[in-house]
Image (cartoon, rainbow, N blue to C red; front, side):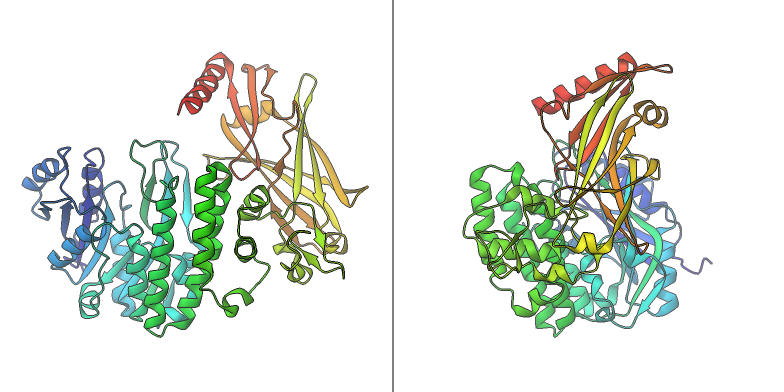
Length: 534
C-alpha cells in the first residue's frame, strides 16, 4: 500500500464557475492515492456548475458534492461546510478557478508526517492568464525546507495570508475550533491563517510548488483581490487585517501581532497607495480618512522599527495630513522597488523632512539606512534616434548626500520581457556626475533585438553599482514630456517593421510594448482601442 494512502481530503469551493471548477477538481483527484476524497461545495450556483460536478462524481467515487441551498456571499461558509464534512487526517483547500500542480499533496504530506507538523506549507505561484507568466508568492519563506516548533520563530509567516498553499491536521483545526468567518467576509483567509498561527502549531515548510493561483485580470467577474476599485474593498481589507491582528494579540502572540501590523504597512498600504492616482476624488478622500482612522491605533513601537521603510513613510504622511496630498510622490514611494522623488526638503536646522509643508515629518532615518535599501530616484528619458529606435537617458538623483558618499559608478540596464521569465536584454553603462547633484548615463534601445527575442511588454529594470561593489535595484520614472512617449515604427530587415510604444506603468515606471510586422501593428492598435473602450 502507498505510504500516503487515503490521508488527505481536498475541499474545493465554487460559485458560478462552470468554466473552471472541473479542472480544479481533476487536479485534486490527480494527486494520487494520498487523496481519500475531494469534497466539492457548490455555493448555490446558477450556471450549471453543480450539475457538472454531479456528472463527474458519478464516475469518481472519491468525489462528494455538497450543494448549499442559499448563496453564502463569501468563501468562508462553503469552506467551513467542507471542513465539517471531511473524514481524512489532513485537509487542504482549493478554489474552483485554481489548480493543484502534480505532486503537491505528496510534498506537503511527506513534510507533515515526517516532522510531526500540524501545518505544512509550500510555494504558491500566481499564474497570469492568458500569458502564463508565473510570479512566486512569498518565495523567501519557501526557499528551503524548514521546521518550526512554533510560528513565532519566523514572524514573516504572517505575510503569507493564503489558506490554500497549506495542508492542515484535521484534528488540530477541530481541537482549536479554527474556522473561517462565515457569510460575506472578504479576505476571510487573513483571519483563518491568523487563527492557525495563534494556536501555535508545529510548522513544516517546503520549497515545492503546491498551488497555482490563476490571475484573470480581464475576467467578467474579478476576484476579490483584483476588484479594488471601490472603497468597500479597502474597508473590507482593513477590517480583515484588524481582526487578524486582534486574534494574534488575544492569543498572546505579540511578535506575530507586531509582524501583522508591519505587513499591513509594507503590503496593503503600499498596494492601495500606488493605485490612488487612478481613483476619483471622492474615493481618495474616503480612503484617506479611513486609513488615518485605521493607523491611529498604531503605537510608537509599530513605527520605530525601520522608520525609513516605504510603508512607514507613507503611513506617516497619511497621519500628518488631514487631506490627500502628494499622491504622485506617494505612488513612486509605494512602487517596488521604492523611489523617493525630488524635491528633497530640509528643516531650518538642516534635518531632512518630507516637505516644506510637513517639516515635522522627519526623513532623518534615511541618513543611516543602508544604501542598497534607499529609495533612490532615477528618471528615464526616451528620445527618438534616426533610423534605429531610441536613445535612453538616465539621471540618478542625489538623496541627502548618501549617493555621493557611496560613489555611484555604473548602472546595469535590463529590458525584461514581462511574460517570459528569465528573458532579458542587458547592458552595463557608466554613470557620470553632472551639474545639479545628479549622475547621468546613456545607451541605445535596440528595438530589432527585442523584437527578435519576443513581442509584447518589456519592463525597464536598473541596478546602480557603487564604489564598494554594492548595488541597488531600481526602476526608472518615465519622463512624459512632448514627444518622449510617442510610438515609433522602426525598419526591420527580418520583420519589415517593428512598432515600439513607450509608456508609463501604473507606478510611473518606463516600459515598452513591441510588435512586429503589419499584423503586429494592427494587433497593438486593436488592443489600444479595447483598453480605451473598457
